Image (tube, rainbow, N blue to C red; front, side, top):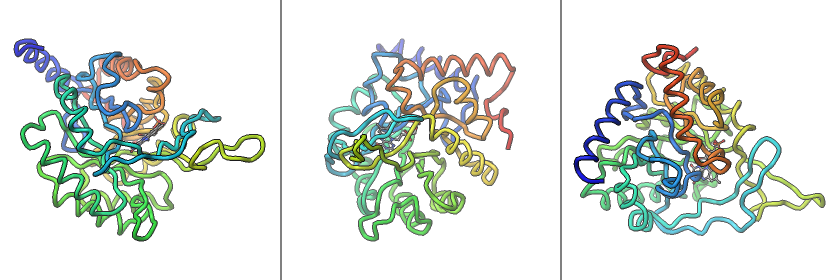
Length: 321
Ligand SMILES: Cc1cc2nc3c(=O)[nH]c(=O)nc-3n(C[C@H](O)[C@H](O)[C@H](O)COP(=O)(O)O)c2cc1C
């Protein structure tokens, strides 16, 4: 794109932001449709299917400080009610991502959410520090850091998002080193008191919550042997949808202003609207990208049409809680 067409493009996006009135936490997005971490590659892989700059954001595959190999195959399979995956957070490390993907994200003007994970609080802190040093020159397209808190803390083997005190310490620590960038926190649905966990993230400094990550499960062959190399994995898609809806509505009922990104089984206009009725500000598309990689753009169009057809200033007007 030359400078002139870049400016025109920017104006178009700004007018969509005004039209759709899209604030998520502290972030203004040009569309309520985001791609979920791990389901749209490292940044620009889906660019063959549509203009990525017209999506609310692309969330990159979760990154760690150093490259990480992930789990043994098989790592993904279809099951009743959706998909189970045990990719195990394979990634090339934050430096690898920056060197191999960030340039193309910027060139294509992709609003980017950088998902980060670690196995200790220091891991997360170091990864964010390193990311920020690399982005020092220009991070205009990076909208937020998403803390993937569904990782075990090696010190006590508990998942960050399953222990309120641990999560609060994590979010406080990352907030302290995060400079001028929104902090989104992605939670696990697998807790007995989700509101306690949400409170820990919000009081720690999260401006938005991404709800939710996958549910743990397994799948067996006829002899009882696990079909996954890692023996267990995360369940996504249809089976997760009602679980995520309940969580979104619970959190919205308690917190009127926190940004909420609804994730879990978004596959058509209906499943996306379910999240807006429940109180989400935006939705993220995960597993359905593997079935129809053009879907995020179709959904943007359908939501825009729905909004204008019903004379809504914002999809937030749909909230029932
Ligand atoms: C193959 C695969 C890889 C995933 N990798 C990540 C990841 O790296 N980080 C993360 O936070 N979530 C990851 N997720 C979870 C998704 O971002 C999303 O929360 C979940 O799949 C629910 O959405 P869905 O039902 O639309 O797929 C992954 C999901 C799948 C299916």
